[in-house]
Image 1 (tube, helix red, strand yellow):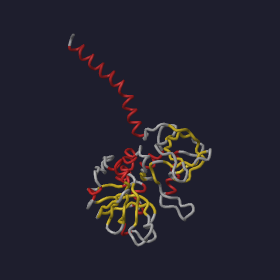
Image 2 (cartoon, helix red, strand yellow; image 1 turned 45 degrees about the vertical axis):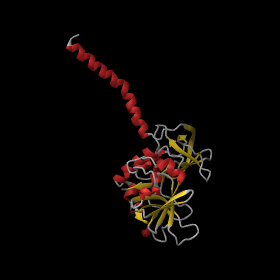
Image 3 (tube, helix red, strand yellow; image 1 turned 180 degrees about the vertical axis):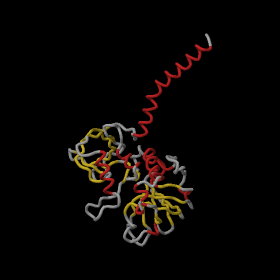
Image 4 (cartoon, helix red, strand yellow; image 1 turned 30 degrees about the vertical axis):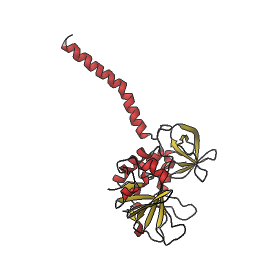
Length: 280
């Protein structure tokens, strides 16, 4: 066989391989954008959009979008938080009333308020929650056992943070120390930074203390299932909570006063390493 024929066969094989593999490459890219990869539970039609992370379907089902948290509209308690209206408006643009959506559920179907916990999937296969994260109108909120979107949602949020997009460029949502929280904003969803000064435990929980300002509690069950393995670049994993002692961390979640003694440090419940960034 001549060298010219060999070269022709080589390039022909290469071209055919590209034709075969291209759809798989495009599919892989699509999968990364359309996360998470979960089965469709059922379909529904959007009736109204309450806020950036809650919708109602035409059959009356209230759906809480999985994996994200958006600024509160505070319908009953006062003025909307900064960018709450923008998040609601953007979700309404992505999934306006009358839109048919597919509902993807993870391992737990309902929250304590009876709302269906689901990811929305639009007709083009995209997840509007992912768009809100990319545009800085939402933060990740992973509450086990619904953790299927943790990796891709974290990556989407991280890009918005790097570019200070939306929430990440607004003073209200900048990380703060627990000591800097005033009496009027000590509760609610916050992003807090600090140094772990003490680690304790009981039969059910580990407690991470940030001086005398904040105590984060993590159930031993959640720690064993989610925290011991790395799930993103900013969580290298820790086999024991004691490894976080004297480390700088970034916490996020709903801050609450101590149940029995309001003079004691604020508390926050952490469920997943998406809510605890280790910054060694």
